[in-house]
Image (cartoon, rainbow, N blue to C red):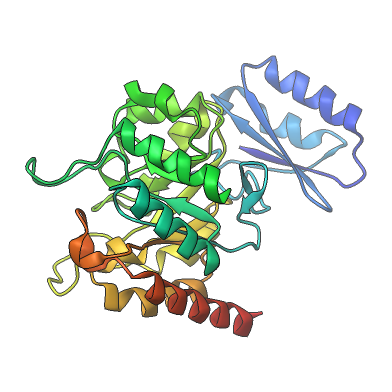
Length: 334
């Protein structure tokens, strides 16, 4: 349920109303806009007398929300959320950022080479896998905590915030200095993990599952937000369809649809979506045109010898070309 307050309402009036609502065992989410204030009521709202609430002098209207996701709902929070990373990078709300780096951290030389190259081309966050979920148990699984150490060294050298995937919530302490924790597609509905991440304050990059709906993605975000962590970045990374020519099907319609449904920022991963480096540029440009808040792109200094996902990785030179093309798209849209 949401209650839209009239303009000119004082802070004391809002505090008094929130105090009354909380006495009815409801959580109250306050969203202050330029002209209106919206109160989002979370909990068993059946106990709220809608007529009584609407009759209050400071209340303009009351609406019950039918969607099961509440905190992530744009009706609760009309303005775009900006997720602040490392007190410097703000994702969402009109900004645009590129997260770039190798699928897997392989060596200090490799991660530093890629980090410096993508930073020079305009990337603002560095991605790199230390723990890798692989379809085959015989494939390279990442360097683990040694990979995290190499990422942190690259962060120290370049100043770039780092993004890396967590595979086991028992490793959360090891991610203390990671700036953005990625929840991969296979863990999108790992609800115990989502609950635990809800008790942190770290930004979470939540990837859509291979066969999950947008509603399911938003419900996973809701699990994190229900724990108190609202720093969530949604990521469209392609879904599995009947089409065999690409690794997945990049659902770009998800971007404007999510923008309607939620206030959370949305980024697009064209690398995993297509599985082919030559398709990354057109899909990255299309994602920018569709209104995405950013991109997540895999870059490797020697893709032919990459230990993970080489065919979809760009060289630093190719990434520079993509970054330039995306900037032109955004300039044209502006």
